[in-house]
Image (tube, rainbow, N blue to C red; front, top):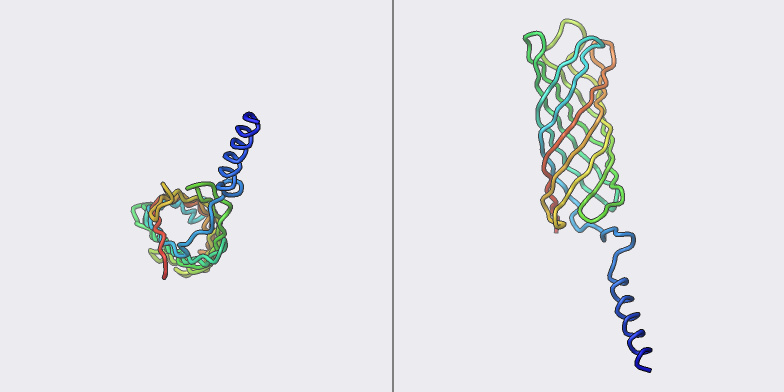
Length: 182
């Protein structure tokens, strides 16, 4: 009888600890639907097939989530140096972001944006503005599930200047703030 009581107590103890765990380590739904991110960005802008510039600048995003899907606004402004000139590449757009299943404080995501691209200085060939798009992904890390975290992302910016297409890789590192709207 004593062994049965000990065994029943151990089963009850382990069962309650298992019930306290989330399914597959996935955290419950995030109560912070709005995220604001800002950071340093590097873009290897492919102006023409034979000419590229390494641009540095800033990236700012705002995302409103409804569950795993969010509406995103993205702004990227970079400057570089090529042939004694300082080219500026600006992208402003909006799109959709999808949060992949996360584990603890690690939150991966993918996104796609479409919008406006601007290039200066103005060249004699073509317009200085064009349709642009951005697609890629990244992850956010929120230590101790806090409101302030770190963001790393890699994207591909597509533009159409000078009657040719440009596909330029972008890497961003920064911080992200989770905000509660109520």
